[in-house]
Length: 344
Image 1 (cartoon, one colour):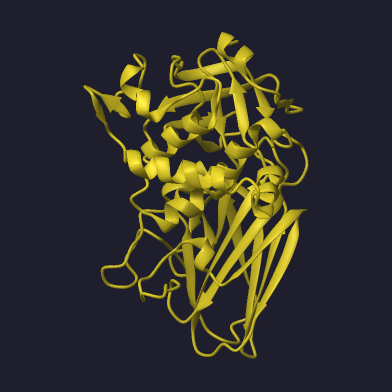
Image 2 (spheres, rainbow, N blue to C red):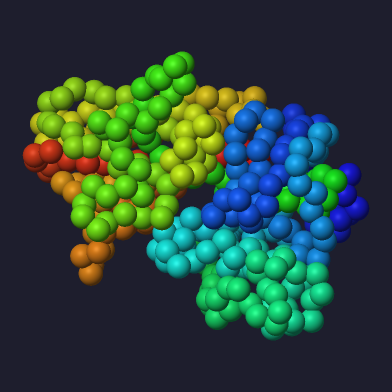
C-alpha cells in the first residue's frame, strides 16, 4: 500500500472495506479528476489528495477505505464536499479543475499554497503547465476564503460533522471520494436492465424548453396529470451523464397528485456494499411546478437543488415525505437527495 497514506491525519477504517477492489482512470469524466469504479460496479467521482505524488491507474486489488467523518482535523474539507454540488449548480463555470485545487488548498498535509504553484515541480498538466494556471485562480481563492470565514457558523459544524469523505489507500497516491447526490427517475426494463422511461423523465442536458439545458446530470419528471394515481420512481445515486449503468440504485420514490396536492415519499430500500446496512438520507430537495425547472429571481431556469423550494437536512433517516398543496393543471417535479453509505 502507498507510503503516502502514512501522512494522512486521523481517519476511521470502514468496516467491510479493508480489502476491496477498485479501478482508477484519470480525467475521463468532465465532473472529476478521477473516475473510480468500485467492486460493486458503482462509478464514483474521485479526487487527488496529494498534488505532489503519482497515482496508479487501472485495477487495484486489496485497497483499503477510511472515513473522515467525525474527525475535527477534516471538518473544513468535509464541509466543502457537502456543498460542492450546490456550488457547481449555482455556478456552471466551476470546473473540476477549480474543485481539485480547492481540495488541495483545504488539506494541510501536504500543504498547498496557490500563490506558490509555479514553485511546485510535480503538478498535473491539466491544472498547471508552462507557467500557466488552467483554472480560475481568483475563484478558488474566493471559495477557500469563504469556507474559512464560516467555521464559526452552526451550519458549518452541522454539515462538517454530518458527513465525511472516503479516503482510499492504494498503490499510488491516496484518492478521495465524497457522499453521493441522487435523483428520482422513472425506469423501464429493457433486456433485463433498467432504462430511463423517456415518457416520464428527462435528463437535465436535454431541451424540453427551447434553448434551455444544463451541463449537469439529473432528471425532471412529468408532465403529471391530477388524478393519475400513484407512480413509483427509482432513486439513483452517482449516475453521471444520466447513465444508470454508472449509478447505484438506493431506493424508490412514490408520487401521488390528487386534490391539488402532490405527495412525495423518499424510501431507501437498498443496502450499502460497504456497510451491509441501508443507505440513508442526509438531505432532500424537492421542486414542484408547472414548468420542468424552477426559476430564479432573474427568471432564468436552474437545476440547483437550493432553488427547489422544499428542502430538509436529515440525520441518516430512510424515509421522508413532502406534501405540496395549492397545485393545479399538469405539473413537473425534481426529487434530489444526498445519500450516506458510500463508504461513510
